[in-house]
Image 1: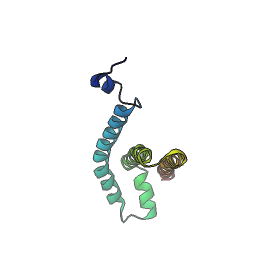
Image 2: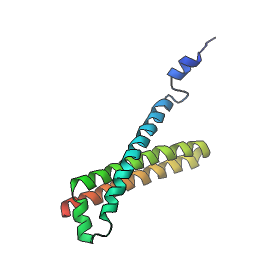
Image 3: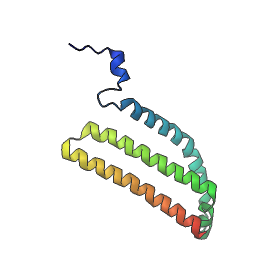
Amino acid sequence: MRYITPMKAARGMGASGTGTLHHWQMTVSAVALAILTPAFMYVVGSAIGLSREGVIAYFGRPYPAVITALFIVVGMIHYIKGTRIMIDDYLDHTERKVAIIFSVIFGWGVIAAAVFALAKMAFTG
C-alpha cells in the first residue's frame, strides 16, 4: 500500500504536475499588467488627437512602442492562459480542443498583428 502525505502531494504540484507553475505565471503576468496598464493608458492618451502622421511618428519612438508591445504581449499571454482555465473547466472533448486551438491562434494572431503594426510605424516614421 502506498501512502502519500498532503505535503508530498503538494510538492508534486497536484494531478497535472503544473498547477503551481501555472498559478505563478498568472500571478506574475497580472502584476505586470497592473504596472503596464497605467503606462499604456498614458501612452494612448498622449496619442489622442494627433494626426495620422503624428500617430505614426509618436509610436515610432521607443518608449510608446515598447510600452504598447509589452502591454499587448503580456496581456494576450495572460488571456491565453486564462481562457485555457475556463475552457478546461466548462468544455469537454472535441469542444475543448477546438476552443483551445481558437484561443491560442487568436491570442498569438493579436500579438503578431500588434507587433507588425508597431514595427511598420517604427520603420515608416
